[in-house]
Image 1 (cartoon, each protein chain N blue to C red):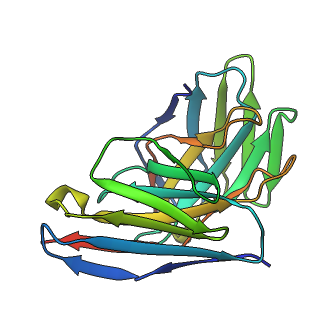
Image 2 (tube, rainbow over the protein chains, first blue to last red; image 1 turned 45 degrees about the vertical axis):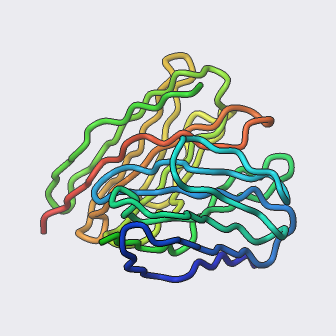
Length: 114
Length: 113
C-alpha cells in the first residue's frame, strides 16, 4: 500500500530564517506530487505541483520554491520566511495512469513564523 | 481555468438530521469530483468521489449526486452524528492532461447532540 510522510510535524521559525519541508511517498512510482498551504480557518491553496523529477509548476508567486530531486521526494523551501508564511502545509500525491484520479494528503506540517 | 463555488460556508444540524452541501463548477470538461473531510488539526481525507459518467454514488450514510447539465454536485449525509462535525471540501478536475484539483472554500458542518 502507499504511504505519504511529511516532516517535521510542527515547526516554529523566526522571520527571515530559511525553511525546508520534506515529503516522501512510498509504494508507488512516478506519482504526481503537490504542495498546499492552509491558513488558519481557511481553504486549500495550491502552491506547487510536479509531474516528474525536476518538473515543477508554480501556482502562485511567493517567496517559496519547490524541488523534486527524486521520484518520490518533494521539498518545499524558502530563503527568508515572512510572517504570512505561517500555516498548515500539506503535501499530496496522486497515482498517474488512466482512470486513477484519487489524490491523498500527507499528515501536514504546522509552521508558525514568529 | 476551473472555478468551484461551495455553499453554505457553515451548516448546523441536530444529530439524526440530514445535511446537504452544494458545489458548482465552471468548466464543463471537468470529469472528476471528490469530497474531502477535514477534522480539526488533521489532514483532509477523501470520503467519496464521483466521475462524470455517473449521476449518483452512495457509501453507507454519505452520497454524492452530479448534475452535468447544471454543472453542480452535492454531498448528502444522512442520520448525522457528532463525529460528522468537520470541514468538508468539494473539488473538480478537468480531463487527463490536467493534474490539479480546484477546491471549493469549504463548509464547516456542526452536528449537535
